[in-house]
Amino acid sequence: MVKIGDILLGEFPLLLAPMEDVSDPPFRAVCKANGADLMYTEFISSEGLIRDAAKSRKKLDIFEYERPIGIQLFGSDIDSMHEAARIASIVQPDLIDINYGCPVKAVACKGAGAALLQDIPKMVAMTKAVIDSTHLPVTVKTRLGWDESTKNIEEVAERLQDIGIKALSIHGRTRVQLYKGEADWTLIGKVKNNQRIQIPIFGNGDVDSPEKALELKNRYGVDGVMIGRASIGNPWIFREIKHFAKFGTPLEPPTVKERVNACKQHLMESVKWKNPKQGILEMRRHYSNYFKGFPNFKETRMKLVLSEDLEEILLILNRIEVGQFEPEIA
Image (tube, rainbow, N blue to C red; front, side, top):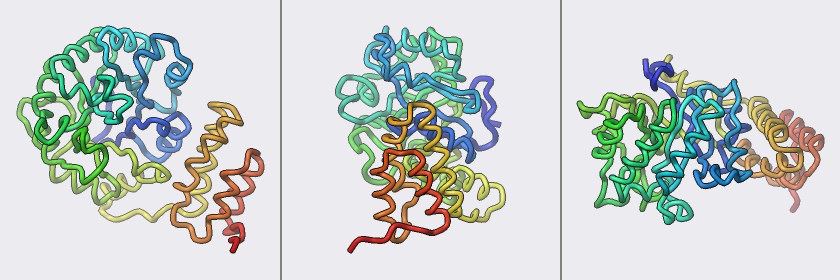
């Protein structure tokens, strides 16, 4: 049984990765319904929380049905991270997670996210400050290192465990790689099989099928896997992995009705959490993902994307369910 502090996660937990502009409450609701065991908020700026910025505060929204749920923080200033963790703890998540893995320039070039992989003493000090600021378990998500010549994840894992983190998620790429190339799980496996390491180790990177998830589990011994991009428009990946792990056979792919229902749930949660106008606007990026591979879908997708009326969008989705697509324009 995998545990983070007192949080029980099952034998081989599946984690939804924190993804900016993706893993908000509406998306998390769909993933939870399909078997995600542990989810995280979008990463939240420590400076934004301290300044009481509306966008950062909104990301603190969590709901009972999501539990266990972690709030993920990032920042470059130790004192700010300490205070942000204190603020985040007030809304009573199940854990606080620190982002030491985000590779994008807007974060890393300001000394946050994956940038801390270049300054391990500061990373350790920052992590200790967060641990000291909260009664909740603190976990970390990071990468193998900054670049090929500085893959220091084994040192990072030992030092962070020694000061009290309760779990570590490792993305199998360096910061320089961004999301290019193939994730290298070799070092993830070395961390997991290090006799000194007693905390759960979760692997992340290129987990895009049930077969891949179980292959990585069996080869590297990780306690669970974290799934990011492969869940976008495909929340069924969680239940598919669980079915494959239990029975050894693939689960039937989602029906058209299941795809439509998931898309409707996502849409309605988005409208409810934000407001009708904003919810409809932000849902536009998801339609292509839910109906990827559908033949003759271009005109229907355009109708979905251009519509600003909730009832009209629901009618279009109903037509998709029964196989009625907009005629293609020559």
